[in-house]
Length: 229
Image 1 (tube, helix red, strand yellow):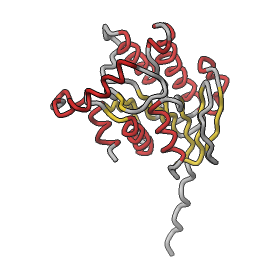
Image 2: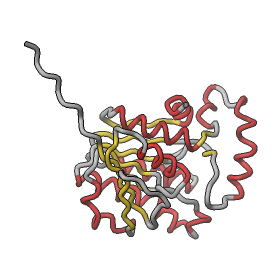
Image 3: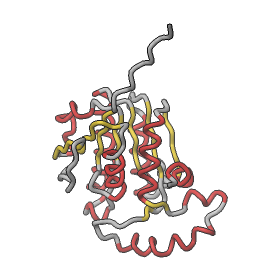
Image 4: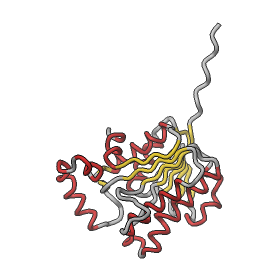
């Protein structure tokens, strides 16, 4: 007599920060339609215009995430928070979103028992960079790595392609130019090729489902490979 097969694992829970952004919106679509996730919690400053049986929406002050710690008891937290200095209004406001909220969410996630934390930063992120944007992104990565989480995945895309709700003139110009220059990005320059937001989202969800322990940093060229259709 053979042993009975173990029961199938229950669908996991996921929490998403930044669901109203370009990458976050695609991550939300993937999670809602993925049978591996039975519950998708969206936490943000405003609700998303979406309804789904698996979707749970919570509006919150991202500077006070500890008040919503119970929501972070999930398998994976997907952090797609990000802005620009222009949109934020100042360097201090930019740092608040791209560093303080990101690291604060990782801290709350670790305390609540979340197992995986996936974060989108940017190519060139470096805590010692002379470039303010890259330095803040790198410091956010450092803060997340310091949390006692089973798994941390950091995705560093180059220019992100896609239609944004907010207007970014410089980025819009780059979106028209960079794809045409992709053939020039070979060797070490491959990591600076523009990458579609949907590809980043697919890579993020696939890496979460791989459930590999430890810290992994995924550069833009590898995002292309993992998130390819």
